[in-house]
Length: 96
Ligand SMILES: [Zn+2]
Image (cartoon, rainbow, N blue to C red):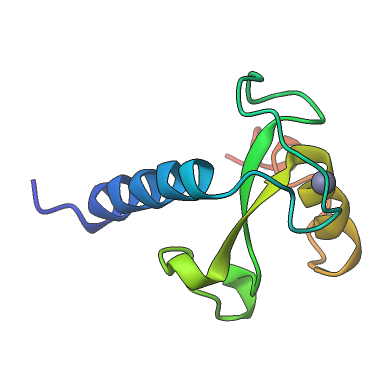
């Protein structure tokens, strides 16, 4: 109750549903997106931020969010967004 992260997650889910409902094509490659696919496939629907959150973009602003293929989003993440954090998960496991 009153947890801002949960509140943002809820708003993000609402925005995601809205993007999926309003858009039909990937904004990165222009191809149609099959919204019936499960979330882990290359062609699965994903909501991408035009200005990444790491660069100050608002993930809750409808104007900053576009429908994309998962693969297109990942590719863009590797290219345009350069964030130097390779292998973020595996390293922390035995830190203590
Ligand atoms: Zn695409």
